[in-house]
Length: 172
Image (tube, helix red, strand yellow):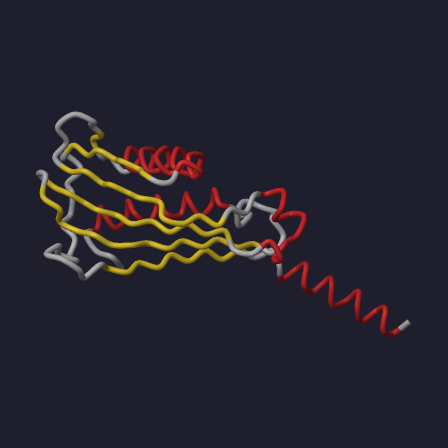
């Protein structure tokens, strides 16, 4: 009986602790070539074009990231233009570890971390001014709440961080 109560208490504790979510974003500058790793701030008055590329099987994530980036840039007051932009932000999805809300709720932490890796090239006036990579992970032990630890959350965090990097001109 004591063993059963101990096991039930352990599961309850794991469930309560599991309701927390962590998201981390790791940026790593690319020191290769002649490209500067010190970013140039893109002014909000500069016209910006956002390109998102990736593998055919990542089409859903490509579309979602492009939409998130456009929304984030517009929310931050940037002028978006496809023709003759002053700045181009090219984002290539290199790796996706998919975790959906259903599998997260079913398996919890056993579903693993949702993850997206991207390579970013920022060009201003047709000159590459910066290149860097970003890795974003999202995890939730349960899948409940506003931060379910899904691929969609990792993509949203990637877009949010990229807009901050472009706005502030720093990888920090």
